[in-house]
Length: 415
Image (cartoon, rainbow, N blue to C red; front, side, top):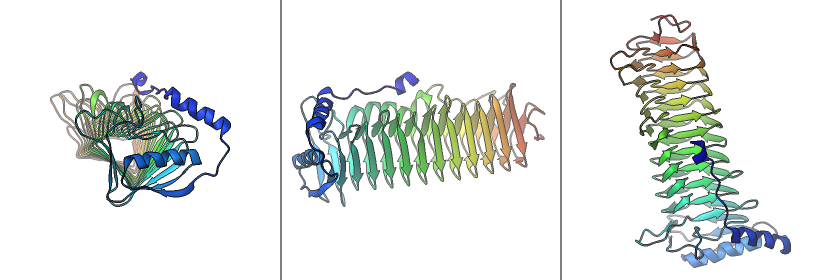
């Protein structure tokens, strides 16, 4: 699994070599030259990007109510629709400004942008970006940094990783007040895949599909602020319908992770999957209405989960942990674990399945969870031998067929 996700993309030798040689002979110029205005013409926009690269950066104003439709890559053999970004460049759109790869039959596959390290910084502001198609990052392959502001990334595709954006090691991805929707990746990260840092603020990641990590898949730190991760699908066996974390930290602050699905055979973690040494931090967040074929309908945590003033509600798993499957250290503080269920015969832990390590619930609520199916057990909490689950000042009520299992195992729980 990790071998697939942690692949690096080699940069095109010619482009990088030319950049390196240029740095040796071209004198430094001030960043952000004068603002350029371009008409509704693809070649004019390509020329403006070339000029901004040569000038050390700049802002390019695009025409409002214009669709820039690319029918070919920037150069023969390239996988990029525009010149690679090597400096600090802002593309500023307006009302109904669109950049797209043509959907006409026979159009070659290419992404829209590539952002090179060390100095490439691309800002996309007030744009719709659609129909990019490439192995890595339909909208952008990022070695440097990218900022997406008040924009929509939709209908893009990657045959490997990052349906809309693929961030390589050392990259930075920042998305603010934007939407990533209906993007697809055959392998990892239907919306975003990244080995670098990712921050999403007031952003919606919805209806994307990936092999694993239907919405977002990362092995670098990711933060969601006041955002939504809704209706995404992980179609492969590994899971992570909404978000897939690979040995990293995922922070969810006032964020809604809902109605995501891990649908593949044996798939886990319908809402959030924290694999390896991942740390999941929930603060005033909601994980609801997610589903997984096997375990962890809402959340699967192999290492550490901290939830404070949050809700894990109405999630479904096949065999274990309708709400949460915990394989390490889990601490719920002031958190509701409500209305979750497992469905298979012999299933366990409608609300919480403690598979190993410790699970501690403080000032929380475990209610209306169900372990359905013949011979199922632990409607509220199931503590597997070798693990420890403890409740403190926590309401446990109206779970089916019982509150906690095995009988007497969960400290503080009375069936």
